[in-house]
Amino acid sequence: MVSLSGIIIRPTTEDDWLDVRALRLEMLADTPMAFGDTLESARALGESYWRERGRRGTAGSGANLAAIESADERWVGTMGGYVDRTSGPMLVGVYVSPDYRGAARGVTDALMAGIEEWARTESDALTLRVHSQNTRAITAYERRGYVATGRLFPYILNPHQREMEMRKAL
Image 1 (spheres, rainbow, N blue to C red):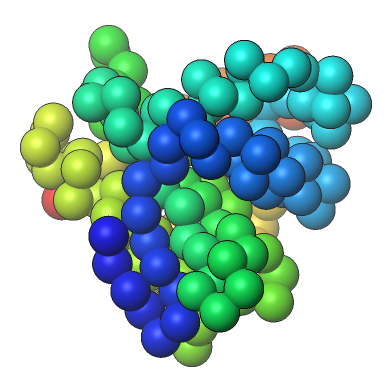
Image 2 (spheres, one colour):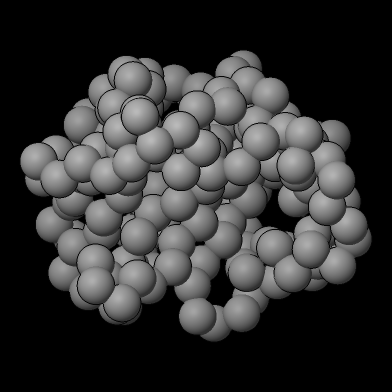
């Protein structure tokens, strides 16, 4: 667990399922093109799904971190990682609430540092995919050392749109 000026960064647990769900719904409402499911489909998922999603932080096969405002225990950000058989460690589920974004707040950097630390135990690089029209995210990744590989993939919710692959040497 890491503390950053009133923000706690820690792995998620099964018991966090209500907060995991609430933040995921916020993510999908805020930036729908950034994720592989829809707000409508996520709202329909039951408790067992959200408990499993919370367990990702302690499962040992990947990583899932939450950024929590210590004053009111509000969840303000999350990032995850898993090991893809062909690409190695993948960064996924990146989100920080609008009022906690920006370099001055440090929430994104703290979450990213945690995921990169986990990824170093698996490989010497971390890969991600980002919607090619999500310029805010692309800029944020570039600022943190991620470089486009030139590989494009169909976006899961609309195969006419593309996700670009980015990678960072660790």
